[in-house]
Image (cartoon, rainbow, N blue to C red; front, top):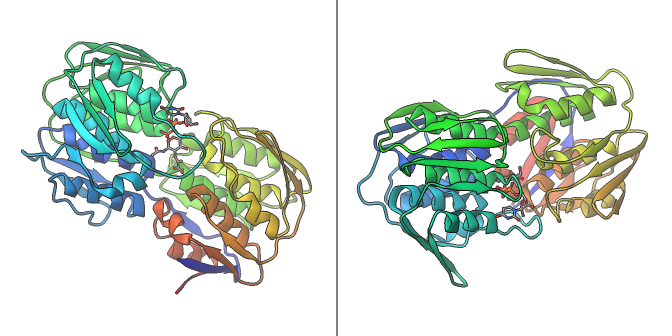
Amino acid sequence: MKAKVKEIKYYANVIPISGAKNSALPIICASILCDEEVILNNIPDIEDTKLLIDIMNSIGYQIKLINNTLIIPPIKNINNYIRNKKVSKLRGSYYFIGALMGKMGKLKILHPGGCNLGNRPINYHLDAFRNMNATIKESKKYLKIEGNLIATTHELEFPSVGATINILLASVHIQGSTIISNAAMEPEVTDVCNFLVSMGAKIEGIGTRCLHIQGVKHFKKTNYTIISDRIEAGTFLILGAMHKGITITNIDYTTLTSLINVLKNCGCEISCNHRSITLKRNKPLIPFSIRIGTYPDFPTDLGPQISVLGTQIEGISYLEETIYTKRFSHIVSLKKMGADFYLNDTTLHIHGYTPLHQAELDCYDLRCSAALLLATTLCKNYSVINHIEILFRGYENIEQKLASLGIDFQLMK
Ligand code: EPU
């Protein structure tokens, strides 16, 4: 699928932010643990949640996303042999491992997939399950995990988001006390904890590097609203910084502190209210120097987008990536548009200011596609973006949101 994009006349309009993809995926899976009905609100209607809902339905559920709400009743017969091929398209499908091990102590699943950001093993997850007494058999296509899990202490080598959540999902049912040290602190991990607590789980240390879980037997019904997507919010704030400002609503600004500090240091004026952020740009910006890291540091999923802003700032900006080995797949396309990038090991040097001109561009992963989209909004003529379907994995109603800012985004046959 292709799209053609150009700016028509940018308006600093108000953009409502949708629910967080990386909360929705684990929380939908976590609903499997509940013994009663779960109602989830603010679930984004994006390709990744559609894939996950399809996998849920292939194991016995009959659920449908209506107006961003999912109603998930408990079911008796869950099929814990997951052979739906969509598993290999979605990194988040590894959350079926934690949920089904927590619920049934056994599953067989195709290897989870996801964006190609370099080598993305799940060794921390699997080591954690072994630590809980599970046996794991891996074939070329499948992973088979089973065992009566025990409560224990996990010391994560790296504060992995996925491994922390998978341990949480598997351990909330186990009798006794589980400890996760060096746990991930991303707001989406906190959201999963708060969801689990809303149905009766006992978790202490939420939002810190050390989580204590006390197993409980029964999970009661819950009606839970997931947090909004800080990466979608950050993408729009960066777009606003590239143009004449923006207001975003339905967002907790405290989840975006690192980005807000960077943009303020560059010279943007930012005011944060209860559930909204307004960014104004009244003067030329100054370069940035960012080291990407785990939360609360600057998020890797905003690295490609902020690098586009760097092309519009006079001077050299620096962006060091520490999470993924293949984060900067967008730079080939941006160089075609006139950007001046130099990648020195893990640090991207961005030499600005460079005007960007229209070109034919290729998306390789979700945040690459967001970065290319931002870049095309600076062009007076149409750019063509190939494989634009990747963008729809993580950005809800993007066509309408762009149109309300005065950006012409048209899907092509
Ligand atoms: N890692 C391992 N072994 C593991 C797990 C992770 O070596 O067992 C490495 C990864 O290869 C990577 C680093 O540790 O280099 C970070 O991985 P982490 O487990 O923290 O990330 P994740 O759970 O795979 C989630 C998001 C990503 C986001 C990262 C970091 C989901 C479904 N994905 O991935 O989101 O970049 O956390 O915040 O929640 C995106 O939304 O575009 C996206 C890629």
